[in-house]
Amino acid sequence: MFYREAGDFKTSYVADSQTFPIAFDRMRYYLVLAVAVGIIPFVINDYWASAVMVPFLIWAIAAIGLNILTGYCGQVSLGTGGFMAVGAYACYKLMTAFPDLNIAICVLLGGVITAAVGVLFGLPSLRIKGFYLAVATLAAQFFLVWLFNKVPWFYNYSASGQINAPERTMFGYAITGPNADAAPKYLFCLAFLFVLAWLARNLTRGTIGRSWMAIRDMDIAAEIIGVNPLKAKLTAFAVSSFFVGVAGALFFSVYLGAVEVGEAFGINQSFLVLFMIIIGGLGSIFGSLAGAAFIVLLPVLLKNVMVGSLGWDTAIAAHFEFVVLGGLIIFFLIVEPHGLARLWQLAKEKLRLWPFPH
Image (cartoon, rainbow, N blue to C red):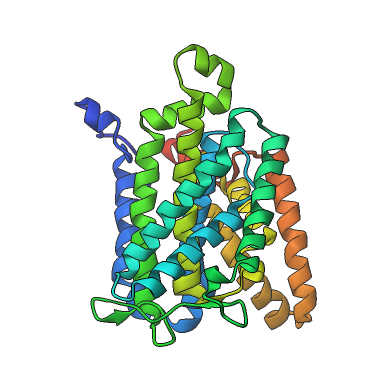
């Protein structure tokens, strides 16, 4: 009785194709948005900002980007960490070379530069796919990390090889630097996630998204019916890399503040984002958000339960986290390949019928 579409009449094509056609879905969306904008910024503290909210928002952007490439277009990528590094270092160079440039513009330009690099490394997808494409993107991951380590220009010839985000403000509030507060950082990342998720949702429901899914399902048949594989694959790499680059720029400037490429953007980050979309659901924007939330909350939950309640050693709890994560990945790959997004969809379908399943 709590989830119904009775009374929702579609009287136009616009109403029939809207993102949330059911009134309850629209109400839930507006409620979540109101809580995210109107309540959380006033109650969030430094711990919740640094441990949960800000990393969730940033990883969600990266997961959406990888899901566009892998979930919607079917092109496997293991170079997410390297592309995040491109966005981070591009943002850093822009912030230091143009001190008066707005931080939001630096982040967006970091995404644009990453998109160009992504198209370059996406060219092999025109001839190879599957496991071989995964190896090619894995090579890109190692090459980009090596490049940022070996060329001193990228880190402004710092003796430590580390890059540090200078302080930048928006509307009088510090967004980056040691004086940045939790609420401005949270709202800054939330704004990017909202806009990029809306953009991804509309792209995947439009002509470009249909061409991506046609290539994913059967590329030869898609080419026969008129889909251009070159355009579809390279646009998927470009859009995906843009999202990942923005996430990398935010990860460096807003979340960490100082990074060393090998530690912050190593192969572990590439697999972490891949695990997010596997658990959340391939080919689903909501699945990207759910997977990012799950991966971010899992260490916090296990630490509170095992260390705080059960008194386990911190190292044991950290290793047990990998055991749980691996088990969940196997479970979702075997039992429910479409992840948490599919489970949520099934739950909504049951609610629409309850309590009269006949």
